[in-house]
Image 1 (cartoon, rainbow, N blue to C red):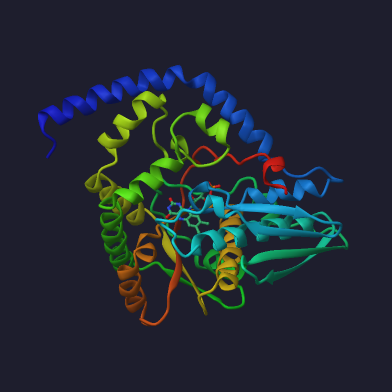
Image 2: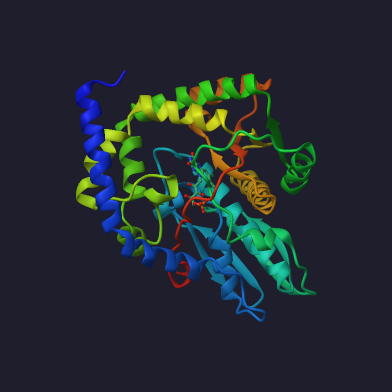
Length: 361
Ligand SMILES: Cc1cc2nc3c(=O)[nH]c(=O)nc-3n(C[C@H](O)[C@H](O)[C@H](O)COP(=O)(O)O)c2cc1C
């Protein structure tokens, strides 16, 4: 139970937050205008550089946008930007290469819609890259393309409704990718078992000061901060209050507690319709890129069907829990790559991206 003092502090903080949040509305307008500029479909006869804008709207870990793009005559090369690694949560660059796969998939879908046939190959070297050849062909409209600017990670309570079997089949078909398997978990007791692992993983991560510091480094507490960097996790996109920077550090410590985060994750999972688990056949950058491609299509197809999704990857980010989770899935030798809940909920604010000029080399 909350102590009286804690209740009072929380009550006062909430009142202060309302006042401060109200004073930040003009900034939020500027933020929303920037979102609208970035999240529009392409013009009828687009510049190829606009494909890069669509590509960068992909999901990516911590919104670090760990990529650069090289634009050649009929080719785009996507390379990792290793200055944007998240070494604590992602020491092997596993999430980083999945993020590149997400970006490659967005680019391919946008290209097809605008009359370019993409041919994607993985270029292995000191740094694995993705090369996408673009040959002119007829334009093909697609629901997935329309969903690119609308897709988001929705980290909120969902409404508990089940996803119809027909839509689950559509999601499975969209996610189909050679070398990647996708399993849907919809049984409530199985979802509770995954929630136990998420909570255990969250506990390990929140006890690690380096993990907390890395996460904090990528949080953008104010609209101004989010606009200035064009990257990172803006508080409002996770359903959190928007406060000035001077207040943010204190509130982060006050509200970002293991117990309340664990409760939140259990609530999030219980309110979801199901959980999708993505697993590659092999563990290397090329296969992680394929996981990203599969996940991005899953997320776009979900969006087109009005279904939200959010990552709950803690059990795969903590190595000892990853083994337990693989055992729970029935094969302790595999390494599951992504865990994503899905269901129905209103949209949260959209996240920003860096300008195209900053990612083209
Ligand atoms: C490989 C990968 C791992 C991710 N892990 C998490 C996660 O553990 N928790 C979370 O809330 N979001 C996670 N995300 C979602 C990103 O934070 C999100 O895509 C990014 O902030 C951009 O926001 P958007 O998806 O709304 O465009 C992950 C995304 C990817 C591609």
